[in-house]
Length: 313
Ligand SMILES: Nc1ncnc2c1ncn2[C@@H]1O[C@H](COP(=O)(O)OP(=O)(O)O)[C@@H](O)[C@H]1O
Ligand SMILES: [Mg+2]
Image: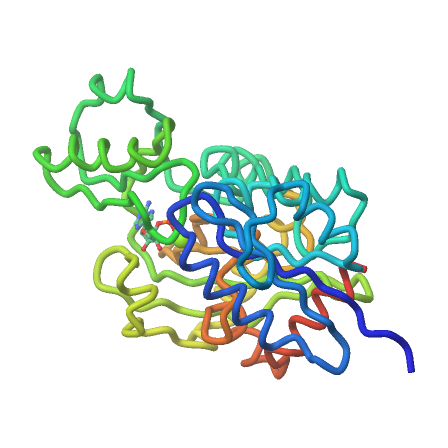
């Protein structure tokens, strides 16, 4: 009998999605088949402290030692200092195979402004928007409703739909509390539809069935994690829209240079798909969107995780 593969599953992280990541990481750790995998959990506290399986603080050097004893790393840290390429960089420097996107796709996709530029360059529509900082936010003139959001955050933290001039400044301040760069975007009218893209262990790149989010206003934190969200998978789409969304999802994944699984989020407008964002470390509990999308295609949660780990090796 061959030895089991040791997989380090990293959760937590130093940003506003800490709890969301802990849930994803715990779920991944529990679902990796114990007959094949020996899971080694690692946690990063909000202040950056690394902790081992017993939640003992071990420091970065202790974590590096644990990682060196593993065959593959499965980073499940959303947001800055995780999803943005930071953990991919750590694995690269340590010479360890890891699940998911590398440094550049992680960094590019984490940056909603850079994502727009890449998408536009390959002909994928995005919402018109401007970039502001604390220094320039005051010059912004109110003209029409906008969505204000941090360039790099997640879970809808700091995202506001601004319908009136009085709420613009508080929205900018809320976004600037999470990032020093903020996007002010036109409001896109359309259905919210997400597609996951996966590079399989055999190298094939596949798109999942589409998932529609039916939300009133923006899809906010409570909608996402309150268990009340109306998620429909597969989304009801005609062939033309389905193909346009799938092509755009694959093109975005490819243009950014993603690996593993990424969730590509769109608005479907009367003029076709408009890309909202790409998540290179999407929510990964069994009930999160990505596992639900692949389950709809017949790929169960444990098999999806297995595919991810095998494609990393
Ligand atoms: N330009 C936009 N027009 C309409 N709704 C938007 C726009 N940008 C974001 N939203 C809404 O806000 C939600 C969160 O924004 P998003 O950019 O996805 O941030 P996060 O990375 O936090 O998920 C989206 O799921 C969508 O419901
Ligand atoms: Mg989003």
